[in-house]
Length: 270
Length: 167
Image (cartoon, rainbow over all chains, first blue to last red):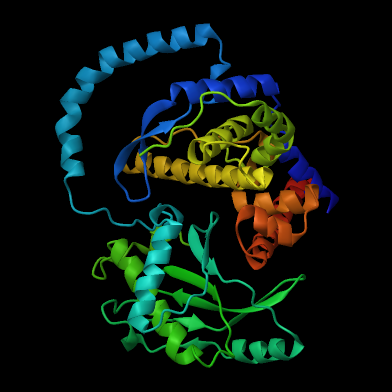
């Protein structure tokens, strides 16, 4: 515990403080100037112009650094622009090819989908399954695995329901391959039924694991807190179809093609 | 249409910046991705709030609102960095230099900004989960899950660091 506290304290102290007058001056300067226009990438995958303030730490660089940077930029432009014009046709060829395909060897689903896009996919999947049940999903990216997980609010279990959940979790359900129409190779396992616990609390949940032939690790993974006692949304007839619908929507967005499986050696999803 | 915002801070807002800056800087440093600076995140958060709300003074809970804004900015920066690196690889360029913490903090960036935010507020500042959830705009369950996962990851990283050092 002490070590954890020290590490967090070290993180919090890594950027030296600046004078608050300098901070206030910088804020006012940006307010009067309106910021520096830059081209940025937004969630809908289109380019847009937005204002981004110049960073206060950048302002503190010495003037000589900026003079050097300007001279360097001029030199780069003098050499780089002709080279860029020469090579431009090949860049355009790449840009005009078909839609971008998710590459499991280097892409992360956290980057591919925004939380808002995940919400839209859930809404669409729920409509397909025939419900509009609002779980209040809170999407969270797991940077180490590149996956999105969804958790829901306020599912707390007493001793009795823990026993129920353990019984439920002890019998993981697997769906029939035929259920996933349109993605025949995603056929090995869609399992659901899991108990997530920690020293602080216990909650029940659902794992939806989708595996594909030739892939050691699962292709898609969801973890959704669920309540197996909910008779309105029975596990067998609700969560598996929901998992399929979610995966189907995500795979379509990833431009997944069943006929072109990834190389087994490129599996980086673990 | 862009809302007209003032060019200068009034006296109350100046006092608020002076009062909140120290704790916001530490929070921003704890949650920021590699390559960013906590001071920049704090400045951007102040600017964003003023530009969207018109003023700092009108907020009911300015510290909580600014913390949440800082966390969102940190998550945006982290996400942009990943996209940039992916684009570099796809364009066939050499891998862009990956910004990093100082060597002893290198591995801590594997923990998500949200998890670091929850752990910092819980362990360093001592807030209850109910307040942390309100500050970060999530449920208590979500805050607890983030804390649990973050704690496991951090402890794993720290224990590996200790074993490496003693090997």
